[in-house]
Each structure stands twice: as C-alpha cells, then as structure tokens.
Image (cartoon, rainbow, N blue to C red):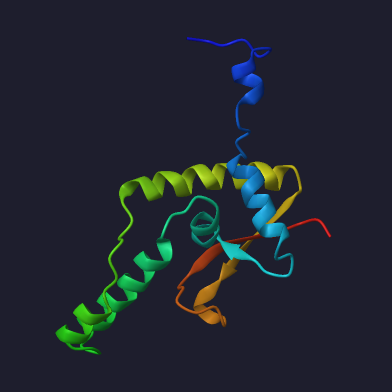
Length: 132
C-alpha cells in the first residue's frame, strides 16, 4: 500500500544511504589507496570475501602439500560467502561504474601477476577516489 510523502510516516522515516554513497564515502576516506571490489564490498555491504579468499589460499596450500591436514582444519575459518555475495559484488560493481562515469571514482586494470600486489594473479580491477 503506498503512503503519501507528506505523511508523518514518511517524514519520520529513516533515510537509507545508498550503496553508491557508502562506496564513495569509503574511497574518499582513503584517497591515496586503491581497492579491489571485494574489499569495498566487505566494507560497504558487509560481505566477507576476505575469509573466502583466505580459505581458498589455505586450500591451495593443502592441495600442494605445503601444510598438513591438521593445520588445514586448524586454520580454516567459517563464514564462506554464499552465492548472494556474488550478487552483492555485481550490484556494487554497477554502482561503482556509475561513479566512474560521473568522474567521482577512478578505475584501473592492474596486472598483479608481475607486481607487488599479494595474493592476486592476472589482471585485477582497482577503484580509487578521483577527486582531490
């Protein structure tokens, strides 16, 4: 049922900050840094890609025989993201692309395979605050 925008319910309702505004605020707080979309999602949306990536690296170490089964289970963190995290990531990416079009955010494709960026391989998209 619709409500009128001149009603008390509407006037007393809480403003909800948009994902785009939250992302821009996060990036503006660290204007000298660039972030992957998953790092922004963890901060802005509340996802936990950091745990997923940590567990993925741990699994790779176990498969390569670098750690024992006991170490694998001891270091495993609960909280593997669900498929909804992928939807959140896609939604955030669309919002960030709009901020890029508005020239509020700068985007770069970084080749991490030959750089000092840890834990990434290949080309990764990074975002940073564009105004200064």
